Length: 127
Image (cartoon, rainbow, N blue to C red):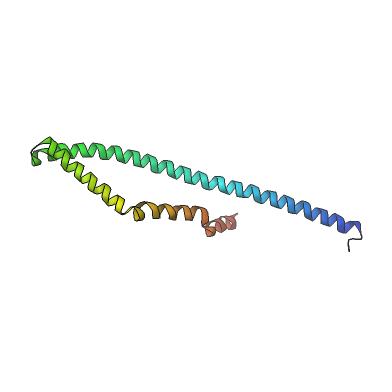
């Protein structure tokens, strides 16, 4: 079947091309992973910065509200108690709705990022 040298040369060339193809696919997977991890880390950094800034704003707004409602409640301590109660109530609501507010959006984002093959196929079609 492989009696002549041309067939053997073709077979060797086929193996070389197959090895080159496998190496290129490995490089493509590495690049794809780096791209997705970069998107994930940059998103996490942006979210962390937004959370920090919102916490600082909440801190200052809560002090503002304490001083604004202190005359209505009768004392500064009462104003702190009211704002503290509101913040605890808000924390309980967020804890109760953590699946809808935190877990599900995170799962959806990660699934779109790592499992969405239609997005990858569209990118390949453009190239």
